[in-house]
Length: 390
Image (cartoon, rainbow, N blue to C red; front, side):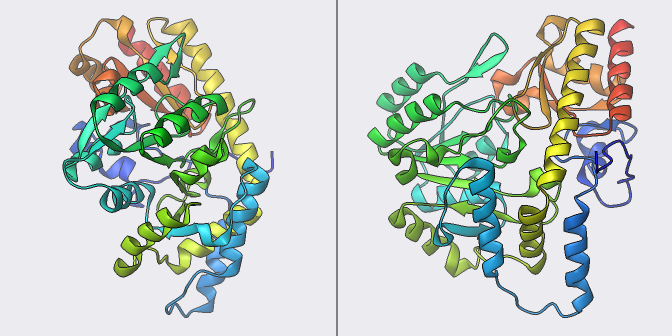
């Protein structure tokens, strides 16, 4: 490989949240942090160099997005996802979660019904609840180690509630599903027929593991294209979450105009010098880095699967098709969620995500981040093995 993903980088003095929040969230700073969804790998040097070059100029006045910024996104989506997008359909937003909040502000009112599909990324529930919208759950079905959408349940929900928005996690977090075209087509049909706007969080779009392909929701049909907002970012892909560089894609002019009418007066569609610089460098120059990173992550997934099968058979993994996150099914341990957290934190000295924060469907589960050097992962799994054997 050209890039070294085995290198251990000390992040403890960089205000990295995975370390600074250990005391508040887990009550112990002496844990191996494998919870927050960023990677421990060096950001691609091509991005770092682009930022250095921009800094050397020495003037950081008001700066807008260049043509190159937009066309780097257009080129990336075209060659990586066969997704054809026009410049005017792209709008900078200061974060994908914020984009979800902006969409709810724009297209719903307090009290309106919003569908989510737990277990799912916790901000889906948090943002909806804090904005005083009604959460309507359409729980996913875990079958043969893989999540599926409960379409019959969704139809019942739609019939019983006047739902305005469905928030889709595509690829799914924490289950790692890359939804098939046929699944997304069916979802698009239901939403279109019932006048439900679909907001597709595709922040993990670029992280499909070898053998799998991400399908952008808006590509599956004209109904999907005309009835959706797609939210993307280079942040997870290239480990630059600290450089806020997200964007929305909206093909329907009416929906886009309404969204921009919310963003523009608040200047929420304006990025920073470093957001534009980092995104353009990432999308133009970092294909090889990403390919190698995902090969490394795939080997880490294989390692975790083998280790758990051989040493901790009471735990099953929901093998991801995308991303560097693994959903661990710990229900056979026979522990309450509190006992499960105590096992991981107090005995194994590990900080993972508590499955119940993804919804009640996540009880008995934990989320493990494997976007880290193998030696750290080996230590973590050995800690867990010893804790369970005690």
